[in-house]
Length: 133
Image 1: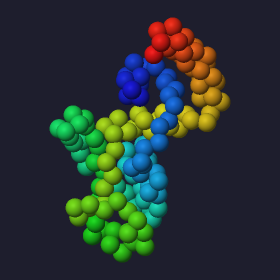
Image 2 (image 1 turned 90 degrees about the vertical axis):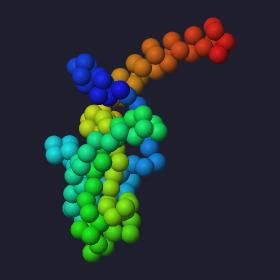
Image 3 (image 1 turned 120 degrees about the vertical axis):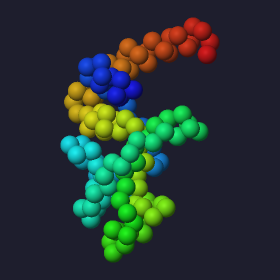
Image 4 (image 1 turned 180 degrees about the vertical axis):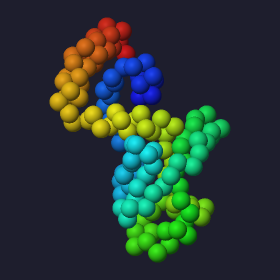
């Protein structure tokens, strides 16, 4: 949704969902300018490729670095290690998602969320009541 709004030139404000496999919870930060993740020790996980997963019929972005490059790191055991790499799987639209997440908490964000409650949620509540959902 974030990327679709971006392509249409629409300044979108959406509520943020918390995902269980969030790279930020593992101590990584996303660098928007270079499209890469940085660990707490300052090492980079670069975008390697865009992967299509048949079971979910979705694409995802793979950010990784070789595990041997991180073996002397004090935080190594806390990292997401798998198959000889330190890796992060992110949505194919992660840069757009991240751009939206930076708006959360701003005065514009709260103003738009208040309007959303009035117009969108109020309308759906009436429809739900009238159609006995």
